[in-house]
Image (cartoon, rainbow, N blue to C red; front, side, top):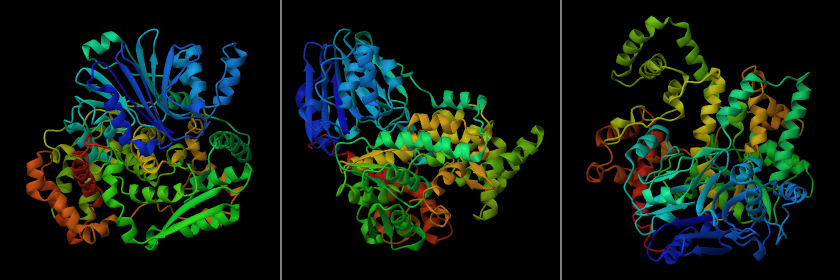
Length: 637
């Protein structure tokens, strides 16, 4: 696991600029750093390394292929790289291997097969840049689900790219103008969805895509069009037309265990200490159970507990760990301990990011890093296996809409909106507002976007902004519930869940891996008929049955709590003064980014205790904290 940074085109003092940028993301790669440059071609690649596979100099990057044509800088892991090596050998492409790193395998695969085929053959998580010295062209690529970040754009006449914006922000000519549409996305979802970034001149490469930049595009300062080498949507559509059939439930459980065991075993490949996050929930418990079943000694597991009972799952995790026989580590935190992490949040996340479970995630990563360098997590299970309770609630609302004649939906939506806009705030107003959203939605995607959003009309909060089009605006042939899970897979999962975990873990040089996001597991899960995902009102049904083979039901069957903090209480208590200073009207007015009135209205209502507006306010607060933090970027490591 590493960090990458590079520039192609004219840039003053390029070597020093790339070196300084790498210093600012040293947490991603504390073990070594590398630099490669072709001055005549005006291309430079930088790299900071967290050594996981092949700890010797043979794994050093940027890495040149054995034929000298391709130069690769890679952030990530290729879990099937040993299989790829054997295939290259069988096909007669075997070079004189210098070591056993997956980076070497990948650069040779690109030389043998070309970029697109090499990407399609990989099982892994990665962001990469590759310079083709023969064609004088630059390639960027990102893994299928977006586990690893990759930003790109122009800094004056140079094309720049990197793992972190804070590393790029000090490059000469970097444009720091804020993108209002990104702020609108933040207000709507509490994250900034790809391809947008907080900076107008920078983009995120979409998951499952790659791009090629040649000299003509560089000269015109045009951005290349990303190309998909794998599509979550295409897989979902194909799966809907070809669902799996099993002779019995036991057969279905066996099939899931096979595909998940393969993914878990592949992701346990490491030359450094490895463990797993364990909340005691279905997803993480299943991952740990399969790790422990593989043998080879006790698995290190990690969980965090809180002194607020409603947010504490540590006792459940401890019970699961005891049953499985792991080497368990736990840390109990007070509100004071968690609050101490708040000032660090804006510096850890490259962009404003407002999922408040980022706070315990940061603390969990810090604890795990004391004992391991790699940790597996259970993220992805809700999206793949229909685990979110909101799917059932959303489906119920949508079913009500479908029963109404088309001619009645418009007038009823107008009436519901009028009731929804009335004062005082009440449960009736909230229900009426939801009904209006359902009735106004042209299709299920736009309905679901409103269903899971915070500020429903972000243009009323962000000055001069509108919500840009995205996957929620596309009508779909998928059935309602399949459409919801796909939308979360291409939006909430990569831009919230995976961002949260990657940035928190890499801030302490910890690599995280997500076995449920092995694309073969996803392809299997998409083909499962819905009754294997939700049965008798119980989500993740099939995954639960697999877990019950390893862990007694009474240890894991309980209501899902999530991984949150009592943010609403904190904003009325220990964070109140800090938060109000961030939301002070004169400050907002001077920045010229936000309309103060709706923000302060929610602040007052939250302080009164009538409503919990903490998720809405947290989005604004994280934007404010990020603005303060980013002012120092580029002024030293």
